[in-house]
Image (tube, rainbow, N blue to C red; front, side, top):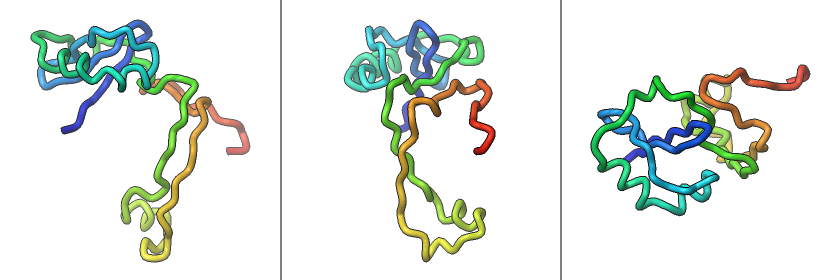
Length: 113
């Protein structure tokens, strides 16, 4: 089962088929929230909710963080890059806390990137 977590400046939410439900937690960071699965489950099973598009969302990943990403998730990604998926090794890379942005924020990058 996929769990979609949303965050505003002052609260965490879990998205359900009927809306976003506020998670009753004191979690200040993503790591704190992941240590509180009972609160996420309780919110998922609660009644009510708000339309997610009414929330002023920020990134659910909090800083500082250690994000590890997989370079080639799917063979189609490798092919889209003009490479051969049979010859590309499974590779991972780290992203810094500076790469965090909200779902509707501009992507800030140095001019040379």
